[in-house]
Length: 422
Image (cartoon, rainbow, N blue to C red; front, top):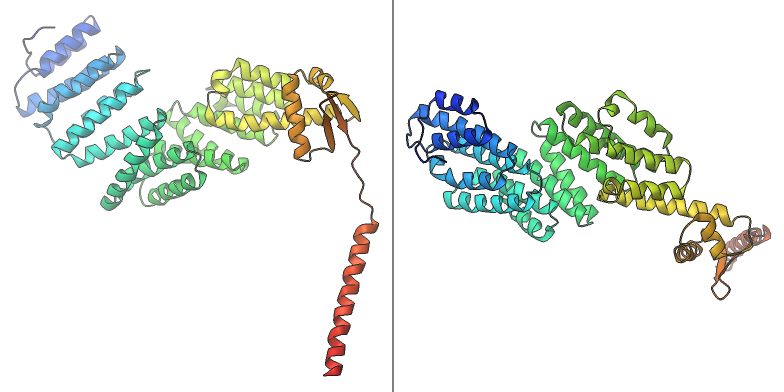
């Protein structure tokens, strides 16, 4: 790369655009940035050169160079307003985020920027970068560090009454507490985000985020109908913006339909005009689960889990709900299979349901303890003994009621006699 700088003029930018290779264009833009001129026109051209260079480095997946570019630009940031500096810094961080497999690099980049902003006393930018860092730490499952960062940041932002940033932080806090399985705190943080949101205009993408988190929390409480409505709102917001998160909202809509035993509606939603835009492995996975649920087939369910492991088991939200669905399907199938018997070998049940014997035995034991049916496991003989449901004799409740009424009569007579004696 040549060390001689180029003049910071429009022709230099045009030359970079006309370059035959990305490497040549990147070299030209670096040379424009090396120009020492601080004239207003030169500064404006350099700002455009930074944007173009950042886009090229992202397209070439050169994340490390983007990180070093941010460090090289620090002297230039002294020449431009703080608002423009914040825009450039956040733009470069967002460009690094668009390169796959750079989560660790993003975290180290954000930490460096936070240190620099503290030294330069750029509070506005620091708070936003810290919020971005907290989100990255949550994705990386570094919950303790994220919680410490958010605790300090939320107090600081509340003092400043920055409502838009407060919505972001409250939403991050809700996601963090949900990941830590602290549902009451997750709901409290989401309520705080909604309270702050009502006082300001929230961009559609952020509104979609809030609706998506609301749906996740309602689904966790088994309120699938309310969750469905929130997921639908989130889907509409993301779909209008052509945001890739739209497919996940649609996936959770289908999950709600499956969980309320309306698996027949899944195919209709997928084949609708909105659903056809997002046909792919995510929706195919949910369709396979819906088919298994409609046919009450454990075998099809396990095939779906095996074939779509990335879409089902690696998505923590879907996996949690499908685990309970699997348990329900297993119980229904076992109850159906043992119904004709009074005594049956556990190995025979395992063969019929096509599952390992120890797994079936453990589930039957759990069902007996939960009083799903009356029976006992004869482990010596390897058999399940099913008892007939004992019919409650109608005379017992009637007798108890009669005794209760006699007690009331005696009490009444005692009160009257006490009055006469007085």
